[in-house]
Length: 229
Image (cartoon, rainbow, N blue to C red; front, top):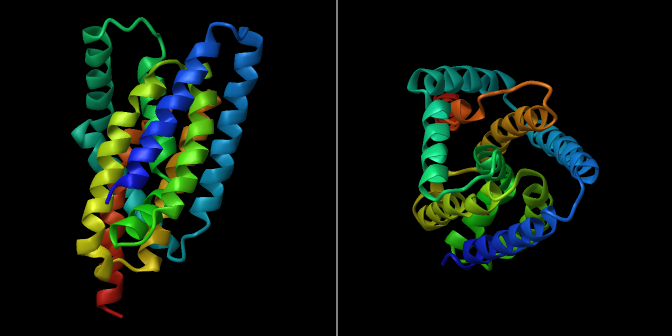
C-alpha cells in the first residue's frame, strides 16, 4: 500500500548520504553555486505549480487566512524549536540542521506529484508517479545535503509520515477529491515553493511553516465555492 513512499524514503536516504559523504570534500566555492541553482530550480517549480490555479481569489484568501492562522499558532517557531531540540539531543553540530530539515521537507512534499502519486497508489494503482518522484528526490537530496548538511537526511521522517498518511487516506477520500481541488492545493504549494526559493537564495526569509494551514482553507473554500454554484 505504501511501497512508493518506502522507495521514496530510501532514495532520499541514499541521495542524502552521498551528498554528505562528498560534502566535506567539496570546496565552498562549489557548494555556493549548487545552493544558488537549488534556489532557482525551486522558484521555477513553484511558478509552474502556482499557475495551475483556476480560482485566483480562492488561492489568495486561502493563503492570507492560512498564514495568519499559522502565525497566531506560531507554527514556524514551534517547528524550529523542535528541530533545535532534536539537534541537541542527537549532538548534531551542523549549523544549518534546521534549515536543511525544513527546506528538504517542503521540497519533497509540496509538489503535485506527492498528492497525485499518493492517490494513485492509495486507490489501488501502481505507484508509478511516486517511483518517478523518488528518483527525482534522490538526486535533489544529493545536492541539498551537500549544501545544507545532515538536516536533509532527517527530512525523511516527516516525508514518510505525510506521504504515507496521504496514501492510506486516499482510498477513503478519493471520491470527494477532484482534479480541480488538487490543482488549487498544488498552486498553494507552488506559492510556498516560490517563497522557499527566495529563502534559499537569501533574498528574504519567509516563515513558510506558518503558511501550511492555507491548505485547509483551500479545501474549505473550494467546496464552499462549488456548494453555491
